[in-house]
Length: 115
Length: 114
Image 1 (cartoon, rainbow over the protein chains, first blue to last red):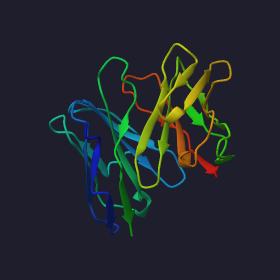
Image 2 (cartoon, rainbow over the protein chains, first blue to last red):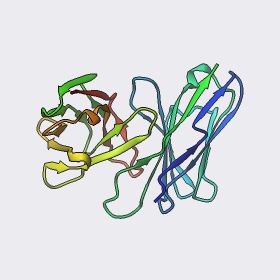
Image 3 (tube, each protein chain N blue to C red):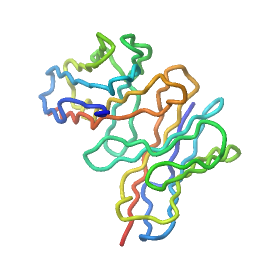
Image 4 (spheres, rainbow over the protein chains, first blue to last red):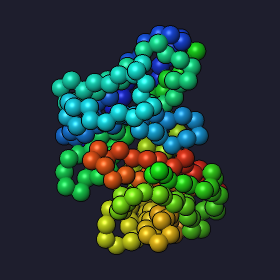
């Protein structure tokens, strides 16, 4: 069990640029979540995948944000035309479909700074 | 609205003393409740969960939490704090939806002094 991995760990970009983050979940986990965490706050839910299907999106996920999980394994989160308000830590988590497996396991996050 | 509140931004305890980090929740239906810990520059680590059954649940690193339905609380406890327990702690609730998304509190910083 290698845990959830995220790349890159840090990203600095200029306002208006596009960025893409990658998440590799724990291999047998078919459920994947994206959260955003700003300084001094708890993580906020962005979107959820079960296998390759995106089943829920938060209102926080504006049309500049898009997420994919094309083969039900890794996932990408893209932000187009970044704004300074997008600066945050983006967290990915995965969960097993097994009975009683309600807890999510989080990756280390990608810290985005928009200048 | 479904929410989680952690009323204390910071909790200070001396090493060896018991600690409590408070959490209250508002959710429809039966709550699924979780505690996570976050160390600097690291992701959230799962500590423990309450799904059903015994109101006192035990988790990693000697932590436990008590579910109180009448007070809608899920306080995190440890009988004897360690300096290494110093970190940011988050309480989370799973709303009654099929997706399993979590709603987090704003976090409580635990500072354990030698």
